[in-house]
Image: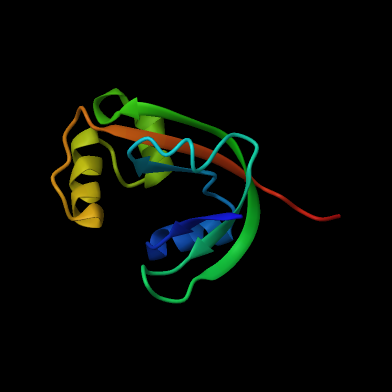
Length: 116
């Protein structure tokens, strides 16, 4: 089973309250997160302990270029980000590398799996 890990405290709050159901990731990672696969939604910094929040199903994963992202798609990553330029700047900090408007991202929509 794969994990979809989040590191931002802002995302942790949104995930715990189930208000975040999608994420944008750098590159084409659809092969890692195919539609209808089950993943753990986790929170924690790289190389440190992670906390499993819940299991989720990947509803849909698709790619776009940064420059093609819509305002509503930007909000999926962080509601405070209102432009592609802001998201690129944020990703440059997270990934510690130069990012361009033509770079590919994967948008991953997921939903919690509950046991009843």
